[in-house]
Amino acid sequence: MKRLIVAANWKMNKNVPESIVFTERLSKNLLNLRRTDIILCPPYTSLFNIGEILNKTDIYLGAQNMYFEASGAYTGEISADMLKSTSCQYVILGHSERRHIFNESDDLIHKKLAAALETGLKPILCIGETLEERQSGRTVNILKKQYVAAFRNLSESQMRNCIIAYEPVWAIGTGIVATPEQASEAHKEIRSLVASQFSYKMATEMAILYGGSVKPENAAELIATDDIDGFLIGGASLVEEQFVSIADTVEDYLAKQEK
Ligand code: PEP
Image 1 (tube, protein in one colour):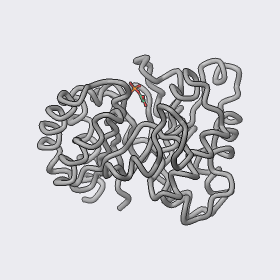
Image 2 (cartoon, protein in one colour):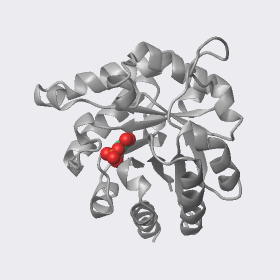
Image 3 (tube, helix red, strand yellow):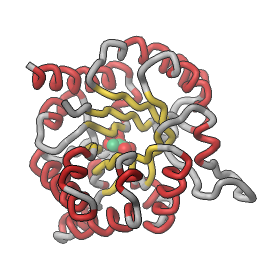
């Protein structure tokens, strides 16, 4: 059975001591998950320490961003190799906050994706439409544009190391969650893009996460929705009980499917 993924995007929250205390407690509460992969993406400053804690567990470490160059005069930037040296395995790329607040272009995101793969990091590539784009009927076009720009020229083996996160911008941090129908429709669209670039098999195997105001109250309905392979979680990942509850919901769903 396909494993599902629950990834935490802490964004710019928790300093180093706070991250350590939080992760030590959290990891103890996630010990019993056998079917669900958990990825924690703390801020850069906490990566090394959190990596040391997670190395003793089955939980994966991810970063929230990186730069595409390997090294050099890029003040303030972090390379893929630097992330790897903290025992990071994943990196979130193309998050809507990077696209909209920091004006990251599709081209820049593609370069980051290529550099991450080259270095052996697994990208969690975010795509999603704004409210205005959805209301003007452009959701499918936007998903296609962002997908094609990010994944162009990738080989099958590179694509196998990628995760896609559908994150409608209007649902991120707003408390407005996509309906299961809206999420399923978008995920199907993304899967068909993967199928036409690669194969039906690759599209079926591809992990496509949903992100945008996932909470314990809506997790069960969403995870039972066709084509949703897990979650990328912002706000609720900062509250131990909420994150554990969502992870347990995903694990319970898989356990029931197994019977
Ligand atoms: C995110 O930042 O990726 C996200 C999905 O945030 P939230 O869960 O707070 O909507």
